[in-house]
Image 1: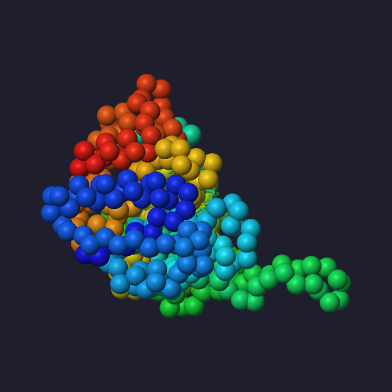
Image 2: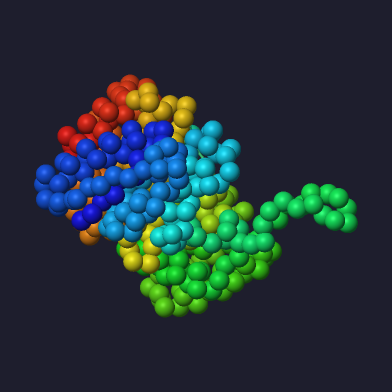
Amino acid sequence: MKILLLPGDGIGREVTSQAVKVLRAVSANGPQFEIAEAAIGDAGLAAAGDPLPAETLEAARKADGILFGAAGTYESDLLPPEKRGGHGLLRLRKALDLYANFRPVFAFPELLGASTLRREVVEGVDLVVLRELTGDIYFGTPRGIHRDEATGERVGINTMRYTESEIRRVAHAAFKAARLRRSKVCSVDKANVLETTALWREVVTEVGREYADVALTHLYVDAAAMHLIRSPRDFDVIVTGNIFGDILSDAAAMLTGSIGMLPSASIGPTGKGLYEPVHGSAPDIAGKDLANPLASILSFAMMLRLSLGQPEAAEAVERAVRTVLAEGYRTGDIMEPGARLVGTEAMGDAVTRAV
Ligand code: NAI
Ligand code: MG
């Protein structure tokens, strides 16, 4: 099994190297991996003059699984797109057609004190936000800022756009995922106002007829936001478009306490995928041994399960994470009174030992 490491920028490198320690512990007990590394983001621009160097894209096409760290910094965010580190990641997702972005939100019983929400609200939360990743208002044209000829005023324009086939494939992914969980899909749209999402609702409903064993419900995005904070346990799989998924998944993230706990998987048509923590390069804590590596380690577990066909190894990694949380190991972002404060490296070592 070929794994490509793309550490990228800032804490991306620090957290990915902890996942690699865990990977070595896993392969000591069975599955063998061939590991390669390539440059992306600001690091890609520095090494090869492009945030997505051609050889990185080629290596990504050949890999069975990609373990990505983070791309971009506040400085490069201000550069034109072709020099922007984060743009390298957007191009990679698009080039590999990684349309299904799974963001599981799981409230670890060992970590209920870390959320800002009351314990009785977050206890037992176990949901997945499935965000469509290659369409919607982020990619639709026309787009841009123009000067209106008649009034002289500037006008900003973006276009919300989905084709039937784009909706259909992500809907299938949602129903299949639900079958492996609690067989519930909640589709989120704004069908009362936006035609694009009225089509979304129609197509998801059609696809749902092929999955009679899965319960399908629909919510408008504003009501969904409210419901997610009020009674998050009601949700199993939430499927939604790119922009609603972006916003709802960040809100859902806070149910678990820290963005440093959240893994993700972005899967394409072949089942190969890119696995990455939900967080970015965190320039404020980079290089200080402060970053929580658990999101990266849990992303590797998702790769084992979804792209490499190693569910037992995935469970072993997830069990190890729960063990170290139960033993009281905490990085600063999830610190609780009386717990054992550790750095990035020590947290990675603890999980590796537990595996
Ligand atoms: P961020 O996720 O990097 O940081 C937000 C806050 O969360 C910061 O205070 C940071 O210290 C904290 N944080 C993030 N990950 C953490 C971890 N593992 N452990 C402990 N604390 C953690 O988001 P921000 O600040 O908006 O963006 C920073 C840079 O990262 C920007 O250049 C942005 O464009 C880029 N970015 C890249 C992403 C990616 O590669 N997928 C995603 C989001 C942002
Ligand atoms: Mg976001």
